[in-house]
Length: 427
Image 1: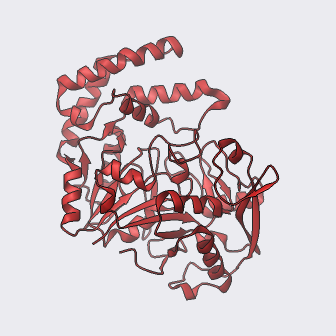
Image 2: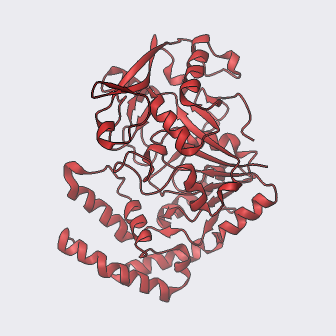
Image 3: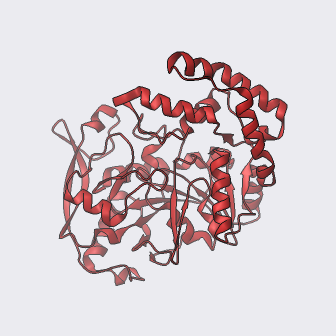
């Protein structure tokens, strides 16, 4: 039985929650392996809409065990609030497992994130201000607080004291902010311990045992390939690795355990925050995509920047992730355009470039080279098979598949749980 990685093949917000939920009934474990509550999934079940930020989408599937892996940074307040909200709506959250090695977002991480972004001014990156970057920085600097530290007050206090010796100097002397007290942080974190203790375990052991037992394990990334700290549009990226390799380090499984890597592609392109975006539309078409597609951040509520499909970044995602399949989402949003442009290459300094530029400067100056595909006007939300789609919609999917370098195995034709065409099984 397979272990699968499901990840965003653009700048995030591609509809990973819908894809995970589609597989949820056949999957035994769904694992979030990176990021924090700076990412969100929207899942529509019947007439109910669920916005998930830290929790894996599989928590909505009764037979599935949701897992938060060691590669995630957790804001305990946000996590408990999200659990409480689902419980109030009748969702059983008791099967959740949390890695003891996952790092915590503390109040000082959030404070530093917000003041640093304001300090950057025009050079700001566009973070969500939720403390994710500073928490990951502390992890790499070996100054982090882990989930397991909540259950040893002595160690927790020592680590917070060491961290604040440094943080308070920065807050006071660089940003002219009030110092944060050790007791303030320790007391708040200790309050979370009894509420989280029943969920915490060695998730790497659980997951490897599950794979050995033939269970289906799905590793679910947040954000997207172009936001990867190593392979994305640096520095306008997240602070972790939402690419396929991040599933191994962020969940504690070896690369030989992974059978398939599924990339989620939106039928057009969006991104949130600052940074280059070659196909961005600042006209009526961009507004129409935003309005029809409901392109507003699940976590932040910010307007998403919208543009036409970019085959260059799709090919790049296929390469750096080793993608075996694509799940194409929001095809229905393109209904009504007479012609649909697709970016097939870039023009940089008068030269045609068909692969992702190695230089950040080149990517900033890249101009899209478009091909125009015939559009369709028919409502496709009721389509159940690929053959149910209008010819031009089928041709559009086939063209994207050929340009992107991996087969399209499923297509989203509407926001609902059942508004998906499955061309071939992921399992």
